[in-house]
Length: 206
Length: 78
Image (cartoon, rainbow over all chains, first blue to last red; front, side, top):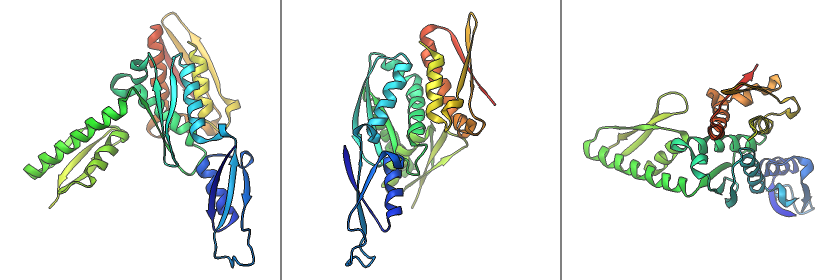
């Protein structure tokens, strides 16, 4: 059993928030409400509830199970580990002799697997917890490369005071560019184009 | 490698009504066609915005079918 604490103004608020955060249904969890409207609460104090559920139902564990089953169905031999888990993101690492097949050309297959995993696991919840799947440090290497691309473009823009248009990128890649340049002086970023694959333009800003 | 089971597994994980997921496999010498049908209300969930999900399913399928050197086509029936 895993127990987590949630607080809120009303019981309903706690229940809704807990179910959305944990991505579970009401019959999968047990709520234990504390300081239930005591004499001294005067409706000001937040309510807290201990929310308990089976270990297997932990979102990270469900992600692991899903990826494991998906790879099994793809006939791919792999070991899968949960690297990081919080309410915003889950990081899963795959170890496999078939890593080239899992990654695909320019990460195409890995991107597709990640898309399916994210939608399948998040679809019933109002809170989107990003599931990131990495394999042989592919993502961390790619992230490093994208950061370098972003910073090089920023340098170029500051020098020439003219905008630079980067290569087409998927949402995951664009996000890294935007995040990297958010804190950089004298530059601004914006995505251009239609559809999923857009291009980021880096602008000069006084 | 069982492409039919793979598509069934993915489709069932995406829809509300898993009992309506059906995959029909038509095999010929050079290719395999998988006809996927789901509940009418779930079609959008299989296709996704800009066809993003359908594309992901097809990418996964072609990744694994490269192993067997046979073309696998996915038809989403609506």
